[in-house]
Length: 414
Image (tube, rainbow, N blue to C red; front, top):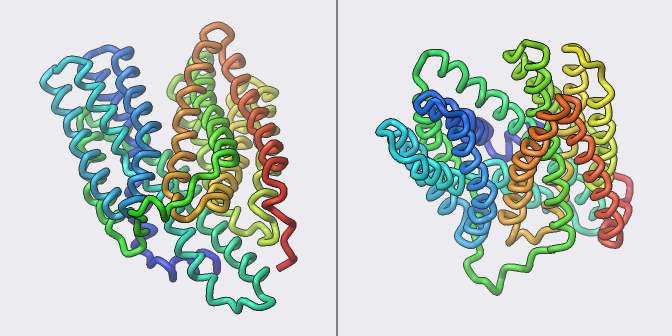
C-alpha cells in the first residue's frame, strides 16, 4: 500500500474522492437517458437514439474539452464543461417532461455529451505533471535511470488507481440509476447526475492540482500523429470489446430466459477489471509501458478467445467475462501511460481525451456490430466481435512497437 500512500501525500485524500464522484454522472447518463425517455414516450427506439446522440456528442466533445484545457487551463475548461453539462442534463429532463419534440431532446443529449467533463483523462494529465515534478529532486548525475524508473513506477500506480476508479464508476453509475428507477421516478437519475456534476466536477476542476494551459500557440508542440493514431485505434479496439460484450451478454441472458441476469454477468467484467487495475501497481517498475502494452494486448486476445470457447452456461460465460475484465484494466492503463509518454506536456489534455474518445466510439461501434450478429446468430455471433477487436488490438500493439522502437530503448535495471 506504500505506492497508494505516496499518491495521497501528493494530492491529498480529497482529490481521490472528488475524482471518483465527478466521473459518476458520465456513467449514469446513458442508462438514465434510456430509462427516462422510454418511460415517458414508451419508445425504446427513441430512447436508444437519444442515448446514441449523447454518445456521439461525448466522443466528439472529449478532444475539444482536452484542447480547451491545454490552451486555457484545466480550471477554465473543467468549470465551463461542468456547468454546461449540468444545464444540458436539466434541459433533457424538462424537454421530456413537457413532451418536446424528440429532435430537441436528442439535441440536448448531444450537447450534454459534448460538454461532458473529461475527469478521467484530465486526472491522468494531472498525475503526469505532479509525478514528473515529484521525480525531479532525484540527483541528475548517474541517477537518471533511477529517476526514470521511479517516475514510471509512480505513474503506473496513479494510472492503476485511475483505471480502477473508471471501472468502479461504470459499475456504480448504472446500478445507482437502477436503484433510483425502482422508486418510480424516471427523471431523478438525470437530476442527481446534474447535481453531482456541480457538487463534484466543479470542485475537481478548481482543485489545486489543476494543470495550467499554454495560451501561446507557438509554445505548444505538435501532436505525434503516428503513434497517437495507433493508440487511438488501440483504445477503439478495447471499446469495441466492451460494447460487443454488453450486447452479447444481453442476448445470452435473453436466450436463457433470464434477462435480469445480464447486468450481473457483465458486472464480472467490471469487478475483474477494477481488481486487476489496482493490482497493476505492483508490477515490476523495470517493465516499461511498451512491454506492459504488448503483454496486455496478447492477454486481451486470449480473454476474448475464452469468451468464444466458453460453455454457453451461466457459469461459463460469467467466468469468461471475468477473464476479459482481468486483462482489460492493464491494457487500458498501459495505453494511457504510453499516450502520456509520447505526447508533449503542452498537448497532454488533447491526447488523453482523444484516447478516451476512442473508447467511447469503440463501445458504440461494438454494440452496433454485435447487435446485428446477435439478431442472426445469437449470443455466439455477438461474441465473435470482441475476438476480432482483440486481434486488431494485438496487431496494433505489434505495429506500435515497430514504429516506436527507436524511441523506447531498453531501460537500465532500477
